[in-house]
Length: 106
Image: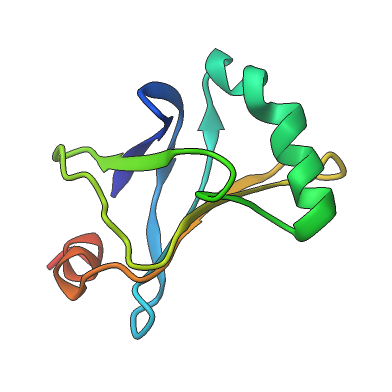
């Protein structure tokens, strides 16, 4: 299911999310960045170099699904963006089983 990724109220991209770990409520998708992402890209890549991910401790990340459901994970939301790769990944963990079922098409 598609979702929009935000920092605060600013849209930074979209992703087609897939469940990667049902038991942990984990999802992941490749970010299709907007122009706004460029404002944060360098800082996110620096955080990747330091600790492997930029997460909600660093930015006010939000994910809103195409049906307008805002995700409220018990875990976190994070972005992995290495300057050495073209792929930018968005992931979240600790999501409610109802959200996982929805993302699995149920």
